[in-house]
Length: 453
Length: 118
Image 1 (spheres, rainbow over the protein chains, first blue to last red):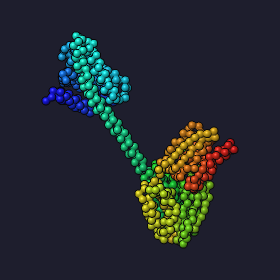
Image 2: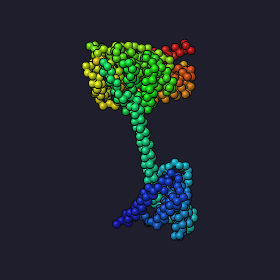
Image 3: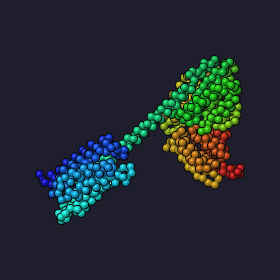
Image 4: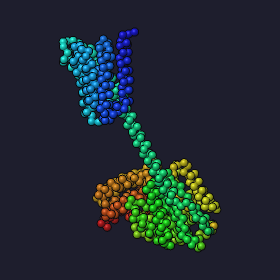
């Protein structure tokens, strides 16, 4: 076989050993400690031994390439210095240097000295980076520079000068190349390792954030469900039902049916501003306050005025709640209501095709202090239908960003007006689902249907 | 883009004007909050929010406006609204916010009114 190819094969063999060694050491926990600059004494000793032995291997594996003896003795101490610090670098350099010294020869002193220097200068680079990772370019550049220096020292110290010059001119370039390639392998493996670890850390942080968010969503949903009524009371002469379908990120909608005695029931539908846990907590607070003020006052306007005062005092982050409150009297069949900024409930009289709206009588609760709420009254005869809803219904969007809208809600109600409140609610929900066509539900959907029977 | 929301602010001699366009919903309300907080923390006392290009505002958006207004009131300032689009006007009307906020036809009218009332 061609001698030059054989020489290259030997060089390749050496590189393979370096790759294996580099792979092995960079995967150890001790090396991780060194990279993170928290190397223990024991770890330091192990690394000095490892890179010292690598330096000895560099001497022993020295091969003749194209007639010139070359070695990678400096590589171990250089890597040790650049990535593990001056102590490990100099330690490995001393081992490699001492071994080279023992072999003797006219370049013994300059070669041994260079090996120790390789560790020390590598350590200086480590130091100069102050915790920032050393780039591949810097490491390889250093290896080239170090070998140039190595040659210079040989010329400076070894005598006779002519022999030294002859040697240097022969081995100079191959030595520089071999050590640079060795350093490239180490530096590449180490920077890959660092990138991998950083990506993993980022992935972990993202995952953790996701888990936290998920837990938060669950907590918000739990709070909301806890503060919705467990059942709707049965009313004489009326068919009443309500549902709440929370969005993934709950919006703080709620409804209530509060028994007030003497055949009267307080009906509530409300939407708290904001989302998630803060909205759910505010919803729990508002529901409790309304329950309390509803039992204090027979007049709906005072129920809301008092609730507003209490809520407004608690609201420093701009939180507010739009809320419709009506007292339904089974005997007189009247609904007396006040509406604090809530979407007007729709009233469809028996036989009529036009809807009436129970318009707001005041400002959303918590928005401003000292508000008055007024009161209105409607009579609900058999066949009359009242649909109360939150904006999650009318603002449910489809793929082309079209809202479900009040018009579509009216159209749907008209088509199912003869049905029971349960069926009407189911039908409205189905039509909203059909409209959304798989678009995610952004806001809570809450519906209450009251039908005179 | 369906959920795009643009917010830009400039400060003049008669106060700061924030222009909001697109949609202000739960996800973009935070941007408006950040911008308003930045102005208020920077010592701005009279802020006009210009809504001529606003297509949609959710309760989260109203909440941010209300919080800023309450915040400014405490230090003797005010937040006013200019140029409501029909949809946004309806939201303001139903929630009663039309009564809480000073609402003007345009930024010019808002600054003029402010100048007259001192």
